[in-house]
Image (cartoon, rainbow, N blue to C red; front, top):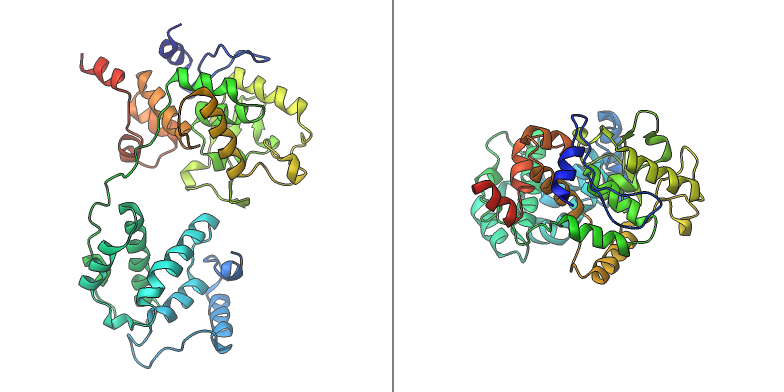
Length: 362
């Protein structure tokens, strides 16, 4: 069977990608810290944020600023930034705390903001034992801290010194994203138990991130309209917003995959409208399966299928590659990937198989 032709025949204006599979299934199948966290909510009102910061400061836990602009140390600024303008999304806040605790504060915590110069910062970044992309994240956080310092009036208005700091090699990828061929994906499905095979199908046929798939509730499925509403994400077993505002959308779903979900719902212990689609029996349905558990199950199946190391994000990359092989216009691919820009679709998710490139060049 010409699988790519099958994909192309199932790619409709509504935007659903489905792959035929020879897997023996009920139906034929398809692919188209806590602590400071409560005080780190940027949506709180200014008086509440100021009161929170003053109450922490009055306890003696925070270093006091010296008199005059620029008298703040980096440590004092970080404490205020955490109280007033820290990211709300759980995984973003967790990442910020990690970079601050492990890199920024140990090096710059006791220094006055006015004494921190671009050249030492750039040399320090070069020496960090981090991937280029991680160094870019650290630089970005420091840039945000200085922007906040000027906004809060603790540093004189002027050019942000971190804007002069270059992050060399920031666009270079240390590891290339993994793509699966249709045959590899079908082999993987044969090794996956339910509901992990249905989970993989949701990610690979709709381009869902694993956090979005785990965040699905049965009430998000529009059975009559053949659609799924992506409303939330599960990150580190926390219910959170989707990665971007553009990711929160209604996605078309094929009749075959819809039937597969219907069969899983009939056999699931947790089938209420507010229950998780991929609810964990170990959590008595209160939470979906953990990311770590899903990753381990996928890797065991990948080893059994002989396809090597596999991450959950490979499904999303594979989805874009399969879309490209159908000849779908790049603007359509962008919409189906729910990207805010064509550059993200073309650059970050731009890998294609050599056979596709050879066919295109000929």
